[in-house]
Image (cartoon, rainbow, N blue to C red; front, side, top):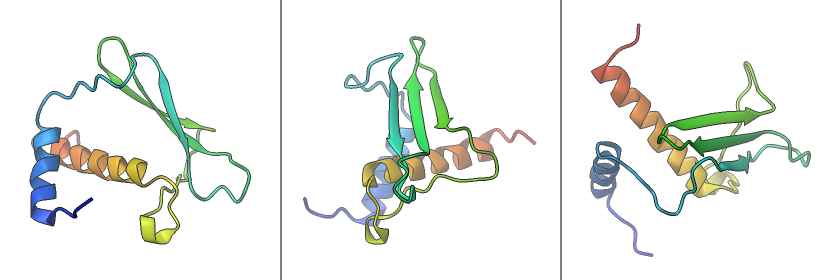
Length: 105
């Protein structure tokens, strides 16, 4: 797969973020779960995303962590879930843009 320029990628991400996104391959009310990369062999600690019947997105953590993070590493850092990591980066940008447009504090 040829690499895309960073500028083109940035524009594509913004286009995706700023338009309604219905993904036919995803089932409603199905929890999509991924275990994070630093489990030390325990296979504990996962993130889950569920899109409900009205289109709302829900995020879950198992077990629920407070003050602890689940890490999804870059490909050069031993990452096992590069697409999940990239999606989380896009989610972070979406949160940043929403905060800029409609601050909550």
